[in-house]
Image (tube, rainbow, N blue to C red; front, side, top):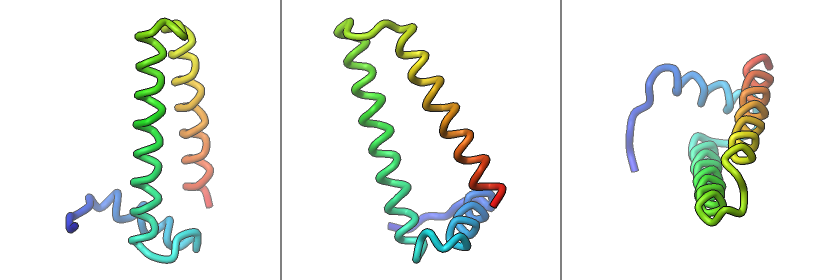
Length: 81
């Protein structure tokens, strides 16, 4: 697979590689795809729970808000390093 990234995404990749957490661009890409798959699974689970009435839309918004807040906090911390 080949593709090109915007300069902003290229910068993010280089920042992540510089931390030493990832040994290569390929390793970073694999982690990104795993995270995307996990997010999609969580969204699908949430959608099914909403449709079946297992949770209310208020609970769903709270879960989504908390997850987004944690993700943004984590992202801002990683950018400060």
